[in-house]
Image: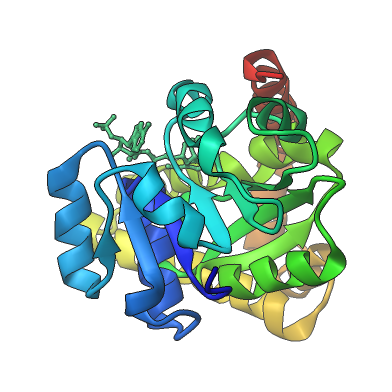
Length: 270
Ligand SMILES: NC(=O)c1ccc[n+]([C@@H]2O[C@H](COP(=O)([O-])OP(=O)(O)OC[C@H]3O[C@@H](n4cnc5c(N)ncnc54)[C@H](OP(=O)(O)O)[C@@H]3O)[C@@H](O)[C@H]2O)c1
């Protein structure tokens, strides 16, 4: 087995983000990447774009791979796992991004002792700016985990978490971009309501979010410290913050994350 060969099963939104990210970042040579999807058109299109290999069936590429990414929908995962089981080898690492599918479930469908890593990515992975929660099965060594973390750097920031927090990671960060989009959408409407043209408001709000996030990233300060700097005595920010506090802005967001976490627990398989 060539230890650098990577297989990606499922060439949809997340599978292609992984493939494109790893190649763009130079983590892998296109000739060492195998793509596989039931949707042959989708698979061939991605392979042509990246100069990567395609496979007609699992038997053609799984035995060659060190890392195999499973990027099909959760409901398709169990069938896929049983289909690839005959080709699993003990030194391979299987990396699943299927929401709600536990490591023990994957191990039980493949063979006990199979090396399994579970991820919860989010959509900014599509542009290399994702957040990826990562949990490892017992059979995965530290070195194997680091190898996978290195590959994932191409699509975003990896955070190691115990698997029991994967539903929380789903509620906070898998779902997270949707909260930010709703905030941005609402702020644009707010800009329009105070007289700013929609296209201008949109640019201002998006830059506000990027700028505020970069300030946090650059200064390593607590958000409250940066907020205090904007809040002058009896000023506009202070008036606005009072309204947000009275309207339960914080408790509303906390409840939303808790509810998403609860729903993720409800959908969990295994
Ligand atoms: N998108 C997100 O924001 C996000 C975030 C976190 C986690 N995830 C996880 O990422 C995974 C992939 O999501 P996605 O949005 O990328 O899905 P997607 O766009 O639907 O892509 C999945 C692809 O896998 C193919 N497929 C299904 N069963 C297969 C099989 N047995 N063998 C080979 N290919 C098969 C599908 O083909 P057909 O269409 O022909 O079935 C489809 O082309 C999901 O498990 C999801 O939970 C997604």
